[in-house]
Length: 373
Image (cartoon, rainbow, N blue to C red; front, side):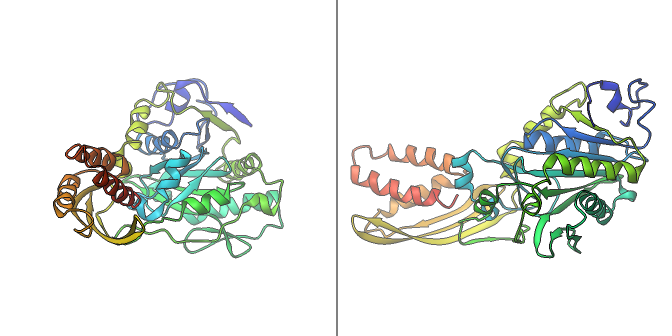
């Protein structure tokens, strides 16, 4: 049963700064089940950390359901250039987000359910949460073969991954979140999770590839709505709370003061790309120009998402050495992204406005360089 969660004081019952309230005062005694009405990945990630930072979870666990429009979410310590096909994402308008928990990269769309289990640090138990999901799935379809692994994944039929796990553990509170593949677009998932980048050397956390499958492919009755209701019922029974899914709107500042500011922060280039652990790019590519092939070497050091060392070497009989040197010095300190590179290269072209051949070579080179960003 879905209940709009619109009364401000209802949620404040669980906050650290306790506010006398009516509404759910007499019914909310040991926890809540929430569902976001937003499909924006940044807003929903901000809800997680708002609850983590502001809610007193002692004896009051929370289960949070949320689904997003197509987006890719990387772990806190990951490298997006290593994990994603950023070019395809830009072309398709797919959002990229970095969460505050660790773990690997996951693809979200409306066919994927995200579940966040909030508890105190002492009550944090990922395996117990996964077993709860398994029980719920078996309640809906007893014939399903779903098992939790030592890596805290859920496998269907012993081989297909349908859920991955990540977590954030604070000083006194913690949350465990996981995905549940119901009817996600597996073709898009597969394409976006394959990075075309070559020559990257990094100590960033790397995702572990897995063969995935949708629950709906196993049983067409296993829709997102059916699964969320089943999990909510199992969670309510386990924690002895009311089996009500309360709808929340992350943009409601009366309910979540300061959340919109947090969501904007999660969208910034500095957070998504700038928090990438330092890495290097060492690669070569062939340039075809007027039926001739030339090899170009590129070595870059990237720190905080910006180029700190830049060595691009092209044959000097094809592109004058002073031009390459100018490109190298101009890219130093710039963001490692195609938009900023385009601006810089266009500025450099103004130095020789009449040389059409040089412009043509320059454009060929810069398009290749942007291809690795």
